[in-house]
Image 1 (cartoon, rainbow, N blue to C red):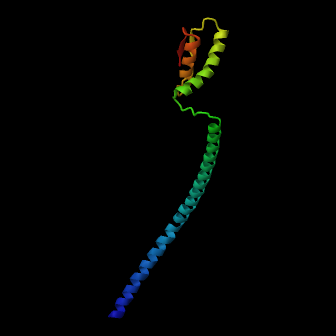
Image 2: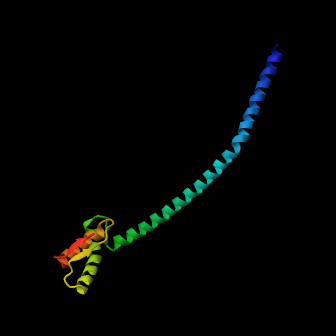
Length: 134
């Protein structure tokens, strides 16, 4: 009786092993594809890290130059940025006021608002009666 039970247990083990092997054969191509995709993504990540490192290195160089020259950083929306953009706008506005008598309206670009702010400041100083529209 023990011999027959062992035989049945062996048959069940054999059947189970065959099922596992069949499932592995079916799953193996998908596993290999996932592995290949993972390797591609790992290479892309390494490339991105290297590029980021290079950008950080350049930024450190630019910051060093700016610090050595005692330059300050203009942040978007800051009054200093608006004034810097106003310098560009002032040159344009002065040029326009020299070319056009009694300039009443000035159209300014609208994006982040910096050029519009700068233009408004420059025009209000150079041509107080003119209106600025964005």
